[in-house]
Length: 333
Image 1: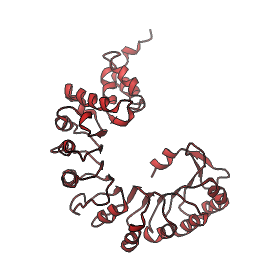
Image 2 (image 1 turned 30 degrees about the vertical axis):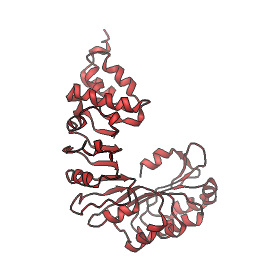
Image 3 (image 1 turned 90 degrees about the vertical axis):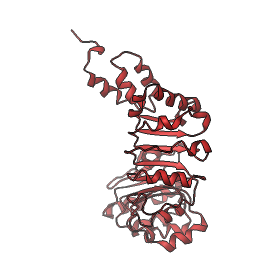
Image 4 (image 1 turned 30 degrees about the horizontal axis):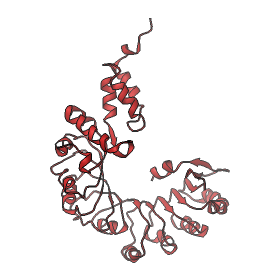
């Protein structure tokens, strides 16, 4: 006799549920929590694994409800690994700090609107011993956030939005190896730290280019994911970042810039470019030729020019490019 699904070993329920994304399949997971006692523990754990307030149609009430449900059953805090919270008081329950302190297994935390007086104190006393990635918008929260960073020495990846200046002493986060934000931030954080990855760096502003070129070269940086750069800075990338293995740039207008990068970065493994479609067409023969000769290069991605933001991907010994989505390309950097 074939057993019913309610008679399966408990490990099978967990294996099935782990195939469901806590972001994209949130409604399904919520339904499974109330299907039967066998499904409940597995679905509950996956449901609380990740929370992103902006993935909800009603983000204010969704976030408040999420946190309040943890307050009702504190064990759920142990399941939370990834969280993005908005610190608008209207989106928070009465005692958010008490609830946040329960999330001792967080590995990634992103905080928005932390400049409000209410939010400034929400993270006071919170300690997440497993936290390795942290992102926040830094407007007027230097004192509070420096204290928070000092309490989390295991952080390896830090992203600071909307701030050009955020002084953090070198003895805080000495092992930080990935930084996102402005180049002014990098010029501060690179002192006393071997930062290897720069991500989400916006367009380089003219007033900081002199600072960039004066303080270089940055020999520790292996990955650079930047916004659009002026021509003279693009041509200096091989000099400023001689040990790059991955480079993501936008917006590239001149095919000759690309060939300059190819020939001067001997360790480069991956290159991705946001560029008008004609750049890819002009470069295609040269890219295929470079891929045959370059000793380390494994792929070159150039935007295909469609509305979906997809890329043409060129690999060694290829005749025709394949397609890759924007998220696939950018997330790999």
